[in-house]
Amino acid sequence: MGYTKRQFVSAALEEIGLASYVFDLGPEQLDNALRRLDAMIADWNGKGIRLGYPLPSSPQDSDLDEETNVPDSAYEAIICSLAIRLAPSFGKQVMIETKTTAKQGYDILLQRATFPLEQQLPATMPSGAGNKTWRRDNPYVRPPYFPVNAGPDGPIEYN
Image 1 (cartoon, helix red, strand yellow):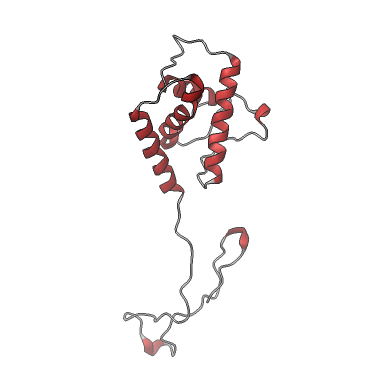
Image 2 (tube, rainbow, N blue to C red; image 1 turned 60 degrees about the vertical axis):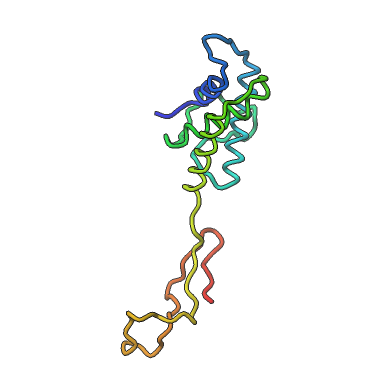
């Protein structure tokens, strides 16, 4: 069972020093923090970091008690990054440890979301020393029989 959006918002507010047992936040402040959380995750989603977070179609459709399907490895990055985004609206300074943790967590999420580009070898590439030239006449890499699909854009073109 994953975190709910309310748990992310509460943890981020605790990170900047607004613990729930000392400060009672109003519903407007929680909604503002929820909109910031949704905007941050939407920004990450646009950068290729797909976490399984349920993004609402409009800010009014977002629910604080909705469960997120975010992997455990992303919790710290979300909480600390949200704390950095919420701190100015509450007049708080963010500790350097929080900034460092947010940066490290974001970098890890970027590393996990980054994949090398798929490409096929050109027909001018030699097969290499381990290939037996007596098995075929062409000492170069042959084009594939079945092209590799590159997602919705179609097959990768062979040069």
